[in-house]
Image (cartoon, rainbow over all chains, first blue to last red; front, side):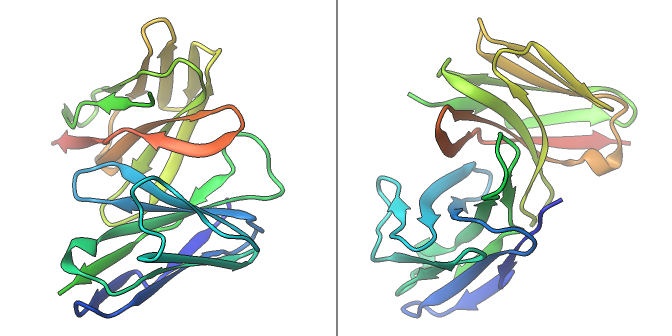
Length: 118
Length: 111
């Protein structure tokens, strides 16, 4: 099946620094990618929809200046957490929609990135 | 509004069947899904069902959908230790890629 990778898998940073997380579709093209955030024992909350070549669409309550999304190519989207604070510590998961595929099973999830802000 | 509810925890003996239940509020969903998440990992799509179907079976997995009661279940036959994970119920709607997830049910396997 289709593979989505995320890098890094784990990151620890100091409060006030910025962290970039990459999401790549390895064997398919994705015009649309999604960024989710998962708190312990909680569901995945959609943060934003990333569209190749255009601005991301953010969900209500998500600060676009805090969570910068860039989708510069059909296989790469990045999420940058700017001026990170301990409350930004979470598990961030991306998914990518296969541009060539249709139907309900063509959104593939990455393995997630564990961010810890000290 | 969109809301998906699941019980948070299920404990089952190895070899028994596991039944994980889910209820949803918006009857206009087009597809309903079950995802599996192992510790520290992303989500793996296990199976999905179109909203006008009642049942779908795939090897050890059986999905039942009661649209009238807005109830979805996942039955795992002959539960194995490798089935230990969190199982998320989810739904999507016509013309929209957005997936609405439940909080997940943690399946614990007893020896």
